[in-house]
Length: 373
Image (cartoon, rainbow, N blue to C red; front, side, top):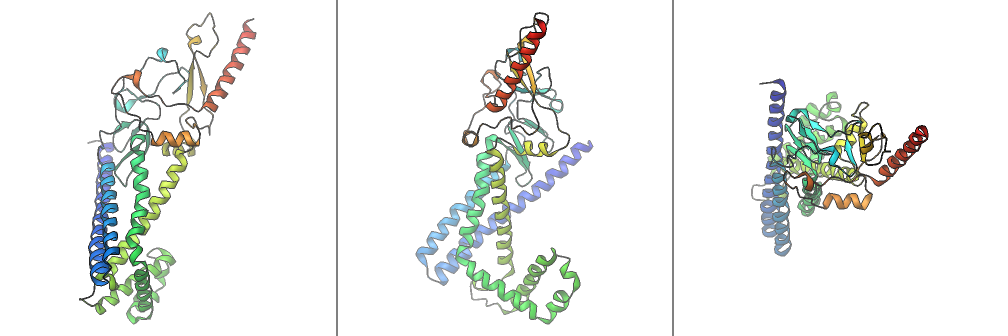
């Protein structure tokens, strides 16, 4: 087994662990919200039958939906967004297209036996396959995010904070009161002060100054465990597990919301995550656009008259079609058409960039004509 294969296998095992961890959090959250909060606390303990019924219905819709979308994004690791098209003949192309060199050649993948890589495709080293319309590989779902899955990915990212807010809304005051009580008890307990609050390392370990208070609060929940009433619902008692699941939910929600807004910001500018990452590198592959039929007719070089290749300037957004067009393009499902390159949906190039390139081409044509005359 090669080093690359072993590294890919280790990455896959790590991603499987992450997937299992996230899925278990969703399942346990469903149990806590529907059974402990909705049925036992809202309906039976407080007698809020209508409110409790609405709450249970809401979490039974949102959390399973979140789990289903998450599982769907995790599937098809080796199959989704991997259509194979034969390499087109560049002489048959009539519309501007992205190419890899001044000769107008199309990109091929050396890792996939020289298969054609359509524009905006990328070979994922983690999955070991070429993805068409690739955006990024997400370790949280253990799969690549491509244009065909971007709607579902954004939906999951925005759904997570919504599900979290709905889930904790009925208990946020109770939870806040328990957190304050646990922190106060911890700060006044002799054992907690000796092992944590009076220890200088508490300012350094467990996340620094902020983590010092979080870990101290966790110690408070541990101390309060001896004072629990076995007959009261779990929501009415300060418990560490409820605090942990809510804390993890808040972290995941903030993370997914930030990622969703960041991803959407790039998409409406016509950029993928890969484009942004490559743009930040000091050394990145040169990009060219071939404009067929825009070159002068030179007698001695008939082949040159068929196309003109112009380099892409650093910072140019090659596929930026404008805010609304980019947004529409994200949510417009363009199906694949098997292996027929005639039906392959070539991505449209930024008209502003094309206009600059055509003006450059015309200027070069005038200079060549003046030289020939």
